Length: 155
Image 1 (cartoon, rainbow, N blue to C red):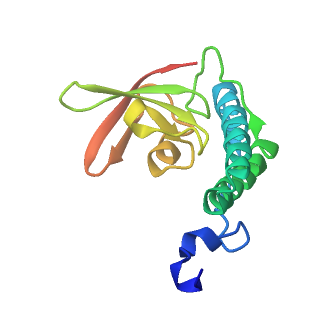
Image 2 (cartoon, helix red, strand yellow):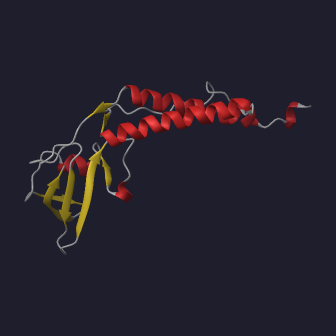
């Protein structure tokens, strides 16, 4: 077969793909975040085994790259247990914020790999989290021109 008919993606290897960038921040994780990392590593290893059996080099290259990233994140994880009755905002704490119209938004400060803002999980290194860390109920912050008050904290 002519080389002209070989897909470029079939020639990809883990070495030819750029590595996934690893955050320079400490890898703080909640207990749930640690469980998610462990599950992701297992999932990727199973998918890599299937790709090897299928001799799917392109998929194997992508899975290998991701497996290396998540294995590194798992190895560097530092589990932080949230305080049962937090007095100030810190990693792992759930923060209830009130807007001027009385509506409330709730966020939990979690690790970077666990973050999912649509579900109330906010990376501890995000600008909003950084504005909240160290504050306590009754404090206010300004975010995008809106004033938000910290109503309560939960562990």
